Length: 432
Image 1 (cartoon, helix red, strand yellow):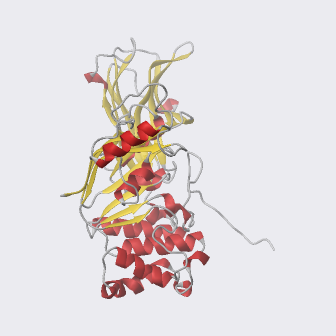
Image 2: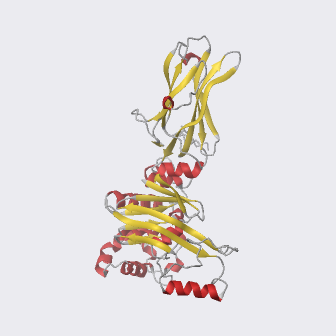
Image 3: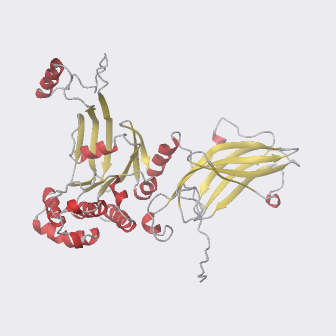
């Protein structure tokens, strides 16, 4: 795949609430440096100025280096103020970098803020043609796509009404329809999709996946809806204080964002570690998360069952009761459940290697990140653990919202609270 976005040593500096540098000398220094094409001597980029000279300046982006290939679906996540929208604005040519470069190959369509690119006094129809002209399309090319845009947006009844009278949802539907259907090579989408209703979000997600998979379009997607990020994006970058602190799979990026630490694996071999986990009764060997086909995976469709598996070795024959148990936590460290074998399921306590498995059904856990603690309990004049390794494994429950929107969510596209979301049997009867 060829690279369509190349970002090199990109900085964006903002000044806080002031114009100029406070003195005529510094203003002239900065102007003269810019006139000669030299670095600004009063910028905080590359300079460590003293005497509080930097207190009125911040780096919204700090030495960003990134390459995006054609057809990639790249998620961008981070806290408010991390630099996400600033990066998109620079790529969209709405803002310019203070230093560095962003080289882009192809035509860009952006939906960064409500009504971006729309003139409020013009009608929806006129804004479609205006946006198409800005993107370099001829009137004939826009005409060929016009009906499809109107049908997708669902605002046909109001297409000849000035867009200043549109609701926020109508604005977004038309804006996305224009951005997605005027044949861009790169589609940049910010959090604005959260404004749309369930039907629109389903159509928008489907359109983005189609554009990437079938048409080879490149998509940059910013959202605080992490389930949407893991469902749509292949890779994701995590921004913090203007820096890229992680660049990898969407699931691992979300894990790092939520858990603020190392990423636990979906499979682990403790025999390759110098540390022995266990006591005189037993030691922990290996563990993994497996799908229904026994594949070791870290991402599980919310509708599918999966298996937590643990191998351990009983060192000597014993009459003491040893029972495997698993501890499940969410990304906040809160207990979801503890599950252990029943008394009748505990195997003989002869020395040897054992594998304990527990199957978690589909449509039980909510979408999100989960961690597994592995333990072997000992029942001998009281209860204690032969070993307990907290957060030994992790996995993500992902949800393809475009498929489950009505199947599981009853048309609701927002964040559904709680760590579990079981599908239970219902009975509804009319009483009167």
